[in-house]
Structures are given as C-alpha cells and as structure tokens.
Amino acid sequence: MTSDAHQHFGPPILGIRTRIRGYTIAQQLDEAAPGTREMLAADAAGACVVLRVPDNERMAHRMKAEANLAQRHLSSAIVQSVGLLEHDAWPVQVLEHVDGLRLDTLTLLYGALPAEAACRVGWKIGVALSELHGKKPVMAHGALSAERIIVDAHGQPRLRDLGRIDPDQHEHMMSPERREVLGGQLRGQRPRGVE
Image (cartoon, rainbow, N blue to C red; front, side, top):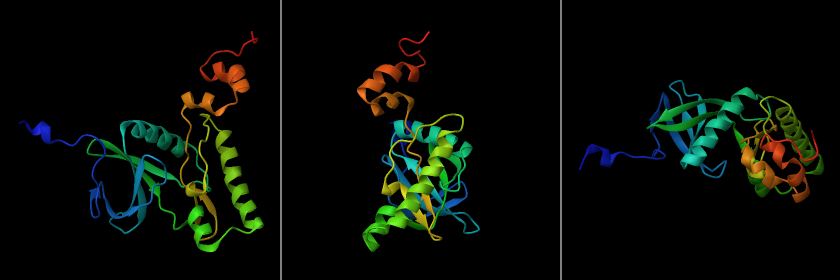
C-alpha cells in the first residue's frame, strides 16, 4: 500500500484548536449556508474571524466564486469576506466575525419582531441587495431567509451569506412565460423576435 492510499481527499477534518494559516479554531458554529461548515477562529492577537468550509467540490467551486464576488461587492449590510485560504488543498473562506444573533434565533427567543423593527430589517437588507444587483459583475441573489440574516450587537441587520444563484439556475427562478421570453438571454442568445 502506498502513502497515497492514506491521503485525505475532500473537505479537511477540522477540530477545535486546529491551526489554519495563523488562525486557531475555537468553536464549531451553526450552518450558514447549505453544504458548508463554519468555525469561529482567532488569530495570534485574539481577533476573531469565521472560517467557512464547503462540504463537497460543487460547493467549493461555488464558494470560491461567491468569495470573489463578495470582495468586490462591499456593503455595511453584508458580512464581509476577508479572503480565501487553502488547507489540505481545500478552500477555506475567511469571513468577518459579527457578534449577534441570527434573525430566526432572535424571534425564537423574543417572539415576533414589532412591525417597525421588521420593516427596518427588510428595508436595510433590501437596500443592500439593490446596491449589489446594480454593480458589475452582475449577480443575482438566491435564497433569503431568517437564517441568513444576523442582527449585530448594535441592532443592525447583516446578510451572512450571499446565496448567489449560479447562471444556469436563473431559468428555474422564472415563470414559464418569462423563461420562454428571457431564457435565451441568460445563455447569451437574443430573445425571440429581437433582431
């Protein structure tokens, strides 16, 4: 048996106190996005970050693309991507650590938000998304849920994950009528009837 038979392929096994390029993992966190794991980590000075690790190659490819977009689309209403590292030949995204509660946790603990607070959360996240959608390269946001919104220690809502839609998913998000008219545009073709 060669030493290659003992190599680990796929996502690294990361436990508490594992070191990744100057960061030491301190705690496993809840899933932010399907197909990823998150860990709270600290650098040598004690500054905290979140490390996000994809569970499979498809998610690794998607996370790399999203991390690249996130660094070009900065907004105070979005948890910032600090960078992308590799550990055991696998990508690890480094994210800003935001001290707060996920919106779903907040409502479980304290009940439904008052109407004014719910409107403020929706407005701030909506403004951030409209800014993102107006920048180049164009991106489309996918799933938006209470699990993807964190309310920080100052009461400000922040989007934890972009939930970016892959270009081949756009057609699935349209009604059949829109898919027929606009579907080709998404694949670089002109819509029917347009010369």
